[in-house]
Length: 192
Length: 241
Image 1 (cartoon, rainbow over the protein chains, first blue to last red):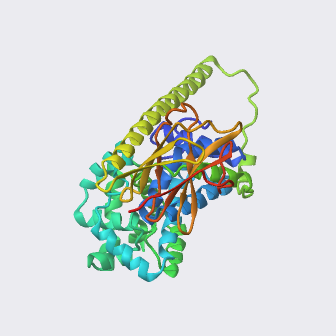
Image 2 (tube, rainbow over the protein chains, first blue to last red):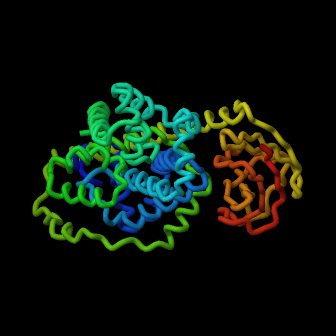
Image 3 (spheres, rainbow over the protein chains, first blue to last red):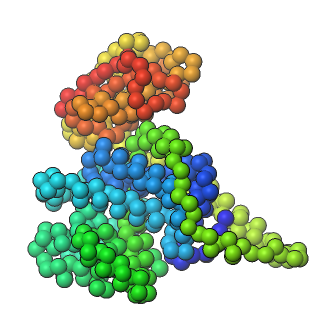
C-alpha cells in the first residue's frame, strides 16, 4: 500500500485503491487484475461506447484496452498521474484510433448523426449519476463554444480541425476554446 | 505551440507531424507538461460520466486472454536503488498508531466504496430494465426450448437491449450451465450465463448490445461458459425489428 497523499492530484480513496491494485497487477497478480476489471470496466466501456458507438466494435476495443492494461502495467508510473487517468487515457486513445481509421463515408455519416442525436440518448439510463451530475454542473460553467468544442473532441473523437469545420470557426479559435474550457473544467472539478 | 495543450489532452491532434512537434516541445516545456497532466486527469473524470455496464462475457474473455499474455519487462530499474534500509531500532509508538489508523481508514473507505458501488449497480440495473420495458419499440415474444420450459423475451432495438426469463426449464446436467448468445448474421456473441437457482422461473437477465438482425440463442455449456457455442442450441429465437 502506498502512503496517503503520495502523488499529486489524487482526490479520493478510490483512486488510491486502484493505484494499489495496478501495482499488484504489475507483479503479475491475476486476481488483482480481476478486481481492477470490476472497478474500471464500466467507466472504460462507457467512454469507448460513447466515442465508437457501435456496440460490437466498442467491445472489441474494450478488450484490446484491458489486455493492454495488463501487458503494460509494469510501465505505469504513479508519479506521472493516477491509475484511473492512465487507463482512461489508453481507452480514449484506442477508441479515437478506431474511429479515425474508419472510412471517410462512414465517418461522414457518423458525424451527421452525432449532430442530430442528443448526446446522451443511448447511455442515458445507465450513466453514473453522481459523476455525471458533477460534470454536468461544471459543463454549465463553460461558454457554449467551449462546451461544444470539448464534447465534440472528447466524446465525438473528432480532431480539432474537424471540430473547427463542424462549428465553422477558425483553427486558432478552436485550439484556444478547447484549452480554456479544459482549464475551467479542471478548476471546477477540483483536479490539481 | 503552447495553446495545443488542450487539443493534445483530448487526443484531438490528428496530424502526425504536428503531434510529434508538440511532443518534442512538451519534453522541454515544464509548464506545458504540468498543464497537460491536469487536463488529462480532467478528461478522464469527464469520461467517467459516460459509465455504463460492460457487456456480460467480456470479463471472462479478457481474463482468459490475460492468462495467456506475457507482461512487458518493467522499465523501472531505478526503483531498486531506492529501497529503504531496514530501520535499526523499534519504531516509536506514535508511528505504530498512525500506521494502524491509516490502514483502518483505508479498509473502511474500501468497505464504504463497495457498498456504494453495489447500490449503484442495483440502481443502474433497475434503470436499464425499466428503460427496455418502457421503450416505445419494446416487443415481447415467448417460445418453448427443446429441453423443455419456456423463454419469454422483451426486447428493444432502440435501446439495443433485451430482457429474458425462463420458466420450467430443467436444471442443467452436473458441471454444465445454460449460456445465452446473440446470433448475428456475421457474428456470434456470448450474452451471459443464465443464473442457476429457482427452476420455476429464472431471474430476468438483461442483455445489452442487441443489433437489428440478431437472434437469441441458448445452449448448454461447461461450467463457467465458453466464448463460442459448443452444442446445438436448445432455443433460437428471431427478434424482428
